[in-house]
Image (cartoon, rainbow, N blue to C red; front, side, top):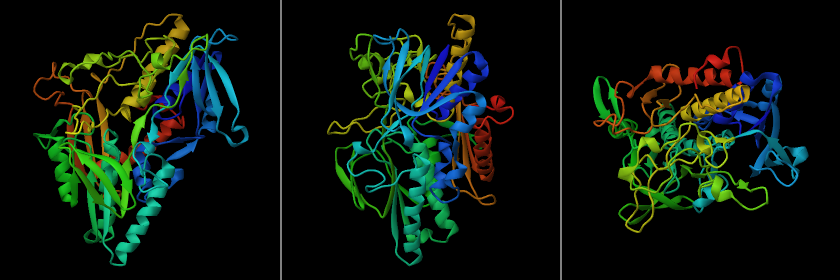
Length: 484
């Protein structure tokens, strides 16, 4: 049997590693990824403030995969033929090579099972003037983060010369997600300026499409902190206030010109915010992958949602927000159209937003898309691998392993400054990720498992996890015992 995994990020790499461990030499595991590197994305914010180098957050995949016996193809998927084609009876994925010696070459790879873990396409072009090479920087990849640090240093040098700087951090599109990464980056910039005694020379502003800060695309949360129940809104606002960070909420950035971001707010009014340095997260979509049936007819809309994320075992029925339920969320991440295709992590299409969708007075949607990064990505990759491996060994698919985000908990360590003696990290857990108002009518989540604390210990934990997860990703001893 042959399993092809598209993508080598958190979910894809996790799926491939567990597939090979469970299937051994008798079956082939093939990973297709456009980059030759694995990146530990959560640490990019430290690259973006000069606390880590690129080499500390990534490593080459080929050496690890060769040791594991996984076939690696540095390429991107461009089309799926779930029924095969006129010359093949098995499913096929068409790939286009990205390695220097093979650029332009294509190949159709057969599969018995396919795992789509391609992650997001960064849609900088969805906001005019947004992104590296234009008017803002990014920390969405380690290369982007390295560039962000280069640009931030220029602002720091100007501050040293007595020139005040306006810094803008947040979301760069009305429906962007990944607020957590931007939140961390704003706090790390504030921390670094404080360490350099330059805080008085900077005006830092947080701009977000969240209805309230601390929403993070998951409808916010109520957390236990110091024995009291508080909201992530109060938590986030207090952290911003302590770091002299102003905030603009309910804002959809629609255009960025040199030194100025133009945005619309939910009341329908248009505004502008000037900046000297800006890091804004773009909108995400799925990758540009087409799907065709055996006759060559385009069936992309059958396999993928309009946002290019893959449809899975979720309830995509259009409903008012008040009628959505945790039961709408997928459990096995299996394609309803083809039972040998799965999607993990960001690659699967969520059935609906977690935060209440909002539109401005002009009809512009301004609210966060649902996050599926970090722990949910790793967990979904693992359970897909377990189910496929057991199906191959037993000859029947039973889906013993499930991972609904309506039941799954998640832990997040938010960096608020890198230092072994003065650093800060906010430790937050939520359970479940998608609020279950039927099971937990008062808070939406289990308060015994939804907590938040901030302190130096949080930084130590995040730094420890950086090395722990790289140890796991490199397949070092007992890697499979470490959590997702």
